[in-house]
Image (cartoon, rainbow, N blue to C red; front, side, top):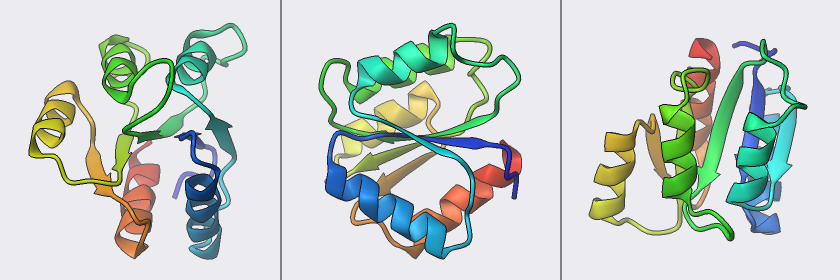
Length: 131
């Protein structure tokens, strides 16, 4: 696992974030975690001046967020040369075949349906190896 990769969690639900962090820490994942409450904060961080050019990221992106929806965030991230290869795992509470297909077309690596479980953690580990 790449311990230098920063895990970005974009989710407005505090309960989800606590659960994600709990599962990751229990699995021995000690990477730095930065949390964003909406799509705008996520984009501001990634494209802002505080972002270091040599950082590696793994983005855990909630499907429904305020300000910018997940599709907008995913599109902007994947269209940017710097972040095009950054692993993005979409998180959702519902199974929507249209959203799954759209997200995969836009370049998401995994489409994870909540609740968070060990399969989700294994996906995170897999992409931390490649980040």
